[in-house]
Length: 440
Image 1 (cartoon, rainbow, N blue to C red):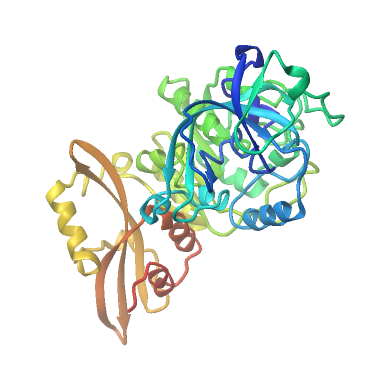
Image 2 (image 1 turned 45 degrees about the vertical axis):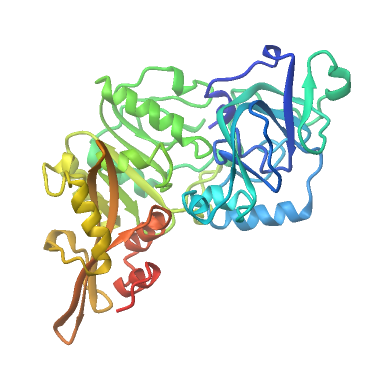
């Protein structure tokens, strides 16, 4: 994606406020808020303030911040560290500070891996909850201060400085951190499913994928109509807005069939609901995407998943199953098994824990490796009138031809992405069970 990481969502004009509370954060943590990676700002102190909050970046950065960011980047996929992605000394976004929550073990356990890694989450500290995050139209220079401080349009000379020489890129240019182009061997599989590709809405400037129509960064595919058969590898700095666009176009009937290649961020709001409704393939291993020169980069630091829309789910399954773990929700395959479970049954399952006896059908058992077999199974449960999707790991362990145990283990949301990765890489069942705390 081009500078669309900021510009593709609703933008905030600096002319809209006279006085606003502001806070200055070290980079890269400041920019990760408008980029959509952070929804909480973690602090050692509590604030009673609620209202508009201007997110600013500190004018300096430290070696410690850089090294910490590299460490985080080895576990989750984040933008490259440079002045384009992380300008220093700027006001970057406006948001609503809606709550200040004291951290407890339970509250911390509810957060995503990315959120945890991008903050200081310790019991007794405070999480400032940020909502309605809107990147500023044209980030402007600000003198930072410690704690909360006021920025006003009437004392601009005090807070606004001459913009730094490293001016921010224009809308039509693509960000270097978003240049992760689809490898040919994956696109060939896409074509095997779709037949032909009518539209590549996130095309690189060279339009190296074969499609009837391409939208590059300069075209801004988010504001254009989509139709036909679509393959999308969205800019990873903001996949959510592109997935929402694809879903909207499909529901309108403009798109007949589509495949999206995205990070396997199963704890995000833009992907988690799709795991319930759409066929998916969790790719085995880490993908080597192409760079600007169309040459393979180092392997991606995060697992990826392909999501399918359309009626030909069986073809999708047949083509991609040799390359990863394919999941087809019951509403796609017509399998109504375990579609609704009463609240009483939910409580029974929690009580039985690892001893719950469940039949594991042969079609859901993917391998016999390490003296065991297993698979991830999803259930839609209804509790207090609301539907929830839960994941379980069904497993059997054998020794000398005899089955020692057959059971099921609930997979907590915070561990689901790691279990999916292990399953996609065909890790031994005992290794997955050990990760889930089950000793056999």
